[in-house]
Length: 331
Length: 279
Image 1 (cartoon, rainbow over the protein chains, first blue to last red):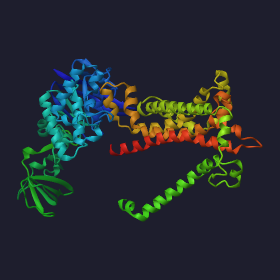
Image 2: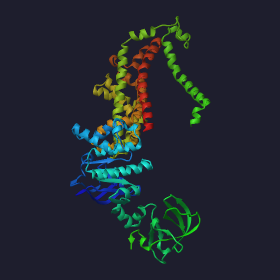
Image 3: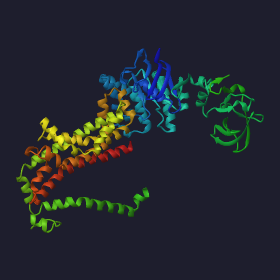
Image 4: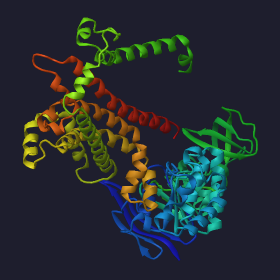
């Protein structure tokens, strides 16, 4: 069954066309990540789904219901915000139970659901505290708890991890993944961080300038990007792009090679000068210049590479991607 | 920053400047207070001397109590000030919320129109206001004053508050909408507490001119039963003879309630600032 269907959704603010003909179908229980650079319209799209913004045209269906004219609270969804957005005047328990009280749920149901959520998120010790007395990670857990207690048809996450520090971000990411497998609920997650997208998603929707560039599972997008933008956006470090004429005379195409597909070899086709080396222990990232282009090679293990030394990189031609001058993938 | 704060010389200089300023600001109040307890002769002979056994006199306060219904004036001033502040804050905050929160045609124009009142003194319209009050039969009622002061205070209130409302996190309001709170609940429960420091500022700005105003009480509500404190005190100031004992005593008493209101609002101000800092 489909949990959410967007049909030809457009959104304009005055003359600014933010979302252009968005068509997306999301299945029940899927974890879908909207990813794209800032300003690509991913948060606006989430707000349109939530009902916080009206779509200028197009149809939004949650389950089988067209919800264009239904207010956010009646759409059966819950949202977790980047800034947590906890009610500052309510303690943790009341923050979580407010929406249920608004729905006029009986008190024992409310208590049971809050207890369940607080057990799942280890919030039992903090139920009587106020948001100002919690750390960033705890606040984010309360915000997630506030979403869980509603048992929504659809969870919406708006860059929930951006305000957390790196270590906490990874832990919370794992918690969200576990939550998804426990609840089996449909989740939509907006982020600009491609690592979050790759690690969490069943399905990634890559957006650019208000358009859907490609939809697919993380590995589909990684192995088979539809265009240069998707190829460059997913993967870390980003894919290297070089004019194919560097290798084959007169070839107008752009060639892409992932940093992890490059290796150092005496008879390599790419003649480069090392400009910087990042030694991470497990990996070594070599940033080098080929002519006036900068490329990155990710070498596994530890390598002794000095700044400024000449180096030759090779790669398996099967691992190269080719794009035409408009950025579309060609074989 | 930290070093500057702990340097004793800096601390002394800072406190010195602040103490000096406090003395200058409090001096007139102090002179009014001490002279209100002195005989008329002592006021003129040595205005800066403290009242002693010879010069001490309660004659000013006795005159004030005998002349007219001073407590009624007091009560009128209090009602007018508190009611006006209430309406200024309520309607000002509501208009500010609408301007800051909702996108509608003419939003900017409406904001400018409301802010225009800051630049045009309301007293220019006194004649028209008087005619309106006569037509509606509100002359010589406290409502006349409350309405005028509310109108006078609204432009600045809308201007300041809408600026603050824009800073309230959108996420918080949206979270409320998703949780099914009505727009009124979002306004009263989520947004208003967060702009409390701004509300206190607006209240303090508006309170003192209203309390001290002589113009509108004199024109719109000069009847005995609607006189405000400022207008009531005027009976002691004649063209040829002024009863300084009574004037000073009346002023001393008039300071008190406004002082109390100020303390209430400034507490809010300080609390708002510190609670905002830790987020």
